[in-house]
Length: 165
Image 1 (cartoon, rainbow, N blue to C red):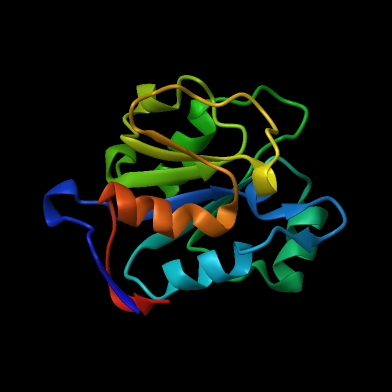
Image 2 (tube, helix red, strand yellow):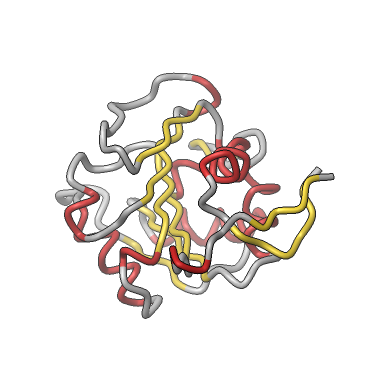
């Protein structure tokens, strides 16, 4: 067991916002480790948000399947322009400044850090290179959503009161 206590108070990380496509594929199958990753964050005091470039029916379907409870869900027109403003809106609804949050997605905008986000995790879906990765120094590139918490721990960006195996 490794005690997770690396989230330094001076970093003031208060929220994590996930992209729905990072957690599940079309058809409702969750990526390996997605539900466990969400559960780990739920055991913390971190506020959780979800961004979905999907219609409301699909989002409700995924919530019913077990994606679980979020403090805010930002539903964005799947046919509109995607950009950092979607993430900024999610942080605004969570009442958290973007610099006090982490974004986790598989298709992060190249300019995500322009809204103030300091840390992001770009997930290649289960090891597949799905979309372009951002090259910002605050971005961690990983191969699976199951690695989000361990990547943050290694980077020293997470504090927590729970135990992780």
